[in-house]
Length: 110
Length: 111
Image (cartoon, rainbow over all chains, first blue to last red):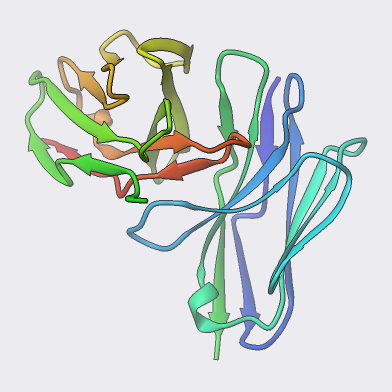
């Protein structure tokens, strides 16, 4: 079947580093996406990995291992505004186009 | 470039009614996808339109339908509303790497 798993909730302290994991099982592979969604708002695109390895974008980095069906989002120097849900998503080669994980709710504490 | 716009932002309907939601993608984007987001199920793909044709469809009943116009604007229709249709409906236009640019959403409440 097709599935994306990620932890439901995580808590971290301002200034710290947090890693949000995602495992996926999809038919075909066309990349792995991360989105950020603040409460009451729409998701916004954060990163895209299609090859194995780490992609760095400022305080945010995303890693992909295609052989393990695994990705993580790394957030450094956490700020209060990083409190949000982080969604892992993968396009599929089937008719569903896109499968999203249920999201990891990150709380950043002062 | 202006972002994705959706109207209306909020809607209250009663069971059995039908509703039409509208979405205008980012200028130049030809693919529009619709999603339903609920606390229990998360973000679920409804369908995708590209150049006025439905290209992909999720696992939703036939009460959910859509269309796309020649200017890429899209509409989504839900007929015979049920309580379980209460959700945030998001429209997204697609970037060059398949990334989704979401609109602000329409919050539908079915009473």
